[in-house]
Length: 158
Image 1 (cartoon, rainbow, N blue to C red):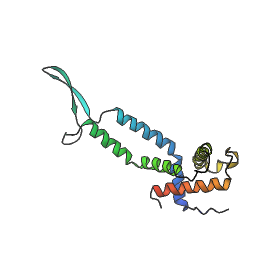
Image 2: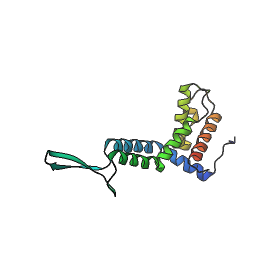
Image 3: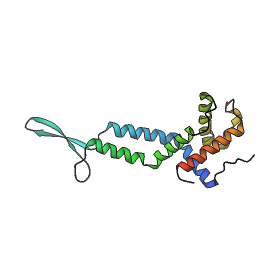
Image 4: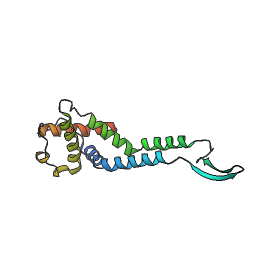
């Protein structure tokens, strides 16, 4: 049976490869966000003054007028403009945008999870053994195609 939701082969393969790296990218971004938020943007040095020792912020970069918060914000902005972050947000929003409102929440979550698994394992994924009850295989693969198209559109591949 042919699906009305069709992507060009090269775009389809690219999107599936991006979905395969989704978990890795998500962990990497979360770790970088924690790292940025936990460490100050510049560096501090301890200097001796007449009153004793004092910690002084030494901003990095030219000019030397930025604060640690501004540098953290700049680093977070750079992270949030990265390709990996755009891939993760595109996949997350495509999963949420799937038309699963008529299904109960457990089934909707299971369908979303199985869509990701089917992209990762490809032909090794067998819908028959996925344990999804309440949805037909043709509908599942239509939702999977909608998901891939949505990710491709959000990443401006189409």
